Amino acid sequence: MKKKVDLKTAVVCVIVGLIGVASISCIILSMVTGKVTPYLAMGLGLGAVGNAIGFVFNMQKRGKNNGSGKNGSIS
Image (cartoon, rainbow, N blue to C red; front, side):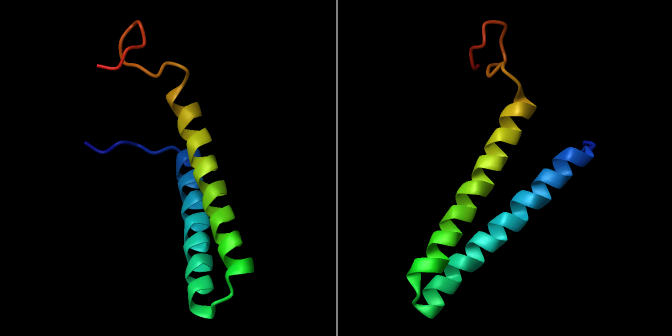
């Protein structure tokens, strides 16, 4: 059974994916060139931004109820 993915989810996944690719490419570029200062910092910063966007989107998607039961406990 296939789930329908709404447009907002697809856009966020594409944006996070592009940020992740840019992050990894900056980190690899820092290893190849040997210049740690600009590229490694940019790569780690982009990785943090991508993870923050994904975290906020998943928390909004999940809602305030973290558990599956009526009392919020995780089964």
